Amino acid sequence: MTANIDEEYFDVVDENDVVIERLTRSEVHRRKLLHRAVHVFVFRSNGMLLIHKRSDSKEEFPSVWTSSCSGHVSAGEDYDSTAVRELQEELGVNSQVERLQKFSACADTSFEFTVLYQCFSDANLTPDSGEIAAVQWLSVDKIQLWMERSPEDFSPAFCQLFRWFMQIPKTPGSR
Image (cartoon, rainbow, N blue to C red):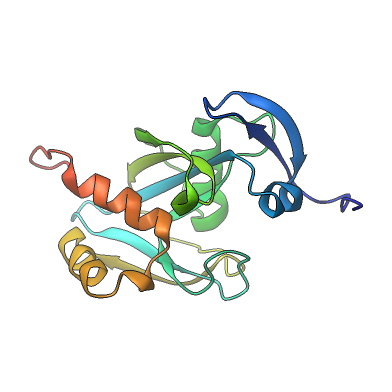
């Protein structure tokens, strides 16, 4: 199999999230190898959470709702810089992010070690139409109710991250 010269490379990692090799995106996904990703939950100052509907052209989980933005960690990149990059690339938002939790790679995360971040921004969005079909600002309670009624409307990774998020203790003004 010949790699496309423009194809992105990922760090393949072991069960401890230690880099063991670099391969093309297509090879990593085809072989279901462990790799890395980030998700960011973007909140408005009024507490609304942004979710987006994935483009119908996406390789995995097309046309389902997911985190505000998400993406793979490229080879040689770290989680924190990836979160900031994805926020800019997918939504056109420049913001500081706060790391919340790291999740182990599993089938629900598409074999990705995933770090969840949050940020707060009232900036105007410029969604990447190649990645994002639609966006919605909703309360976490409305998202939770929707997810309970129709979990198939959401990506498995988002379901896992959102359920965890809803279980963490909240301080006033933290959402």
